[in-house]
Length: 357
Image 1: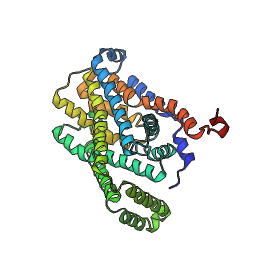
Image 2: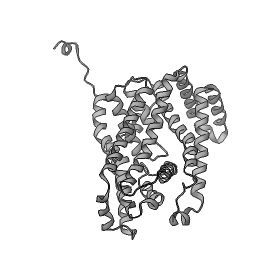
Image 3: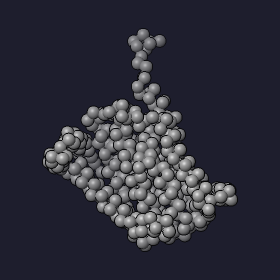
Image 4: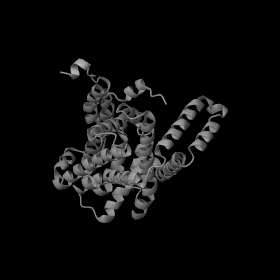
């Protein structure tokens, strides 16, 4: 695999932070002017929050990020120091925040790990592992949490009913089916029959109207084989910590909003489960968003999914939710990226004379 440095640096560009920020601000101002329920009094509602729950939400986010750092260290078998792991996670999150969710930051993550001194084949395998674990959390966890939510997962929203009718449920189940199929195929390819996967891939892309992507398919098949070699023979002592870390990371991602909503309104245990479950649906919706980091899409759907619990506090909670879960990675990425580039690309190599000084 050859990494396209030029293309990757187009993604890893601090100036890109303005695109999602402007989109997000545009949606916020549109909601403020066109939604009769949003006014100056609504904005003052931000001060009604319970501070202990706000601190809890911040704490959950910090723990989630610590989980990410721990997981990438364990996946790379501690080739990364804690400091380098923090850089990797911040830049990975930044890349995800400035690209549409459907695109993601996979290629950038491989590039970052490679520049941190991890061989390309190993970097590919490590990023594939994170992707499969994240997908499997959703594939296995979604039915469980939806069962406990007792069917109260799709919001009662006039806007959604008028625009989407029952298609929101259809979008969810189709997306879930695609994710499940993709995850199972990738898991089988990586851990069971990588060469068979490559053979099938080449056969598919030998079809006349797919032939122009045959070389890319062959390259991807080679990556799977290389990644499979890297991961084969790994013991349970390798897998258990990163599986538990994945569960912790995603649970923290969702529980942060539970804490944030609780800062404004009390939630029963059943409502906590429903809020958690509805975020699974929102995650699917945001994954197909064409905007960077689902800017605009996230703010709109937040209101449709959670106004049932928040009522007059919906607007301010949606702003706080994005301020805690999204915008920090844009800011941190813009700060850390230039430093990382200097450290990785412009390291001053000591000359023999310097080393004796």
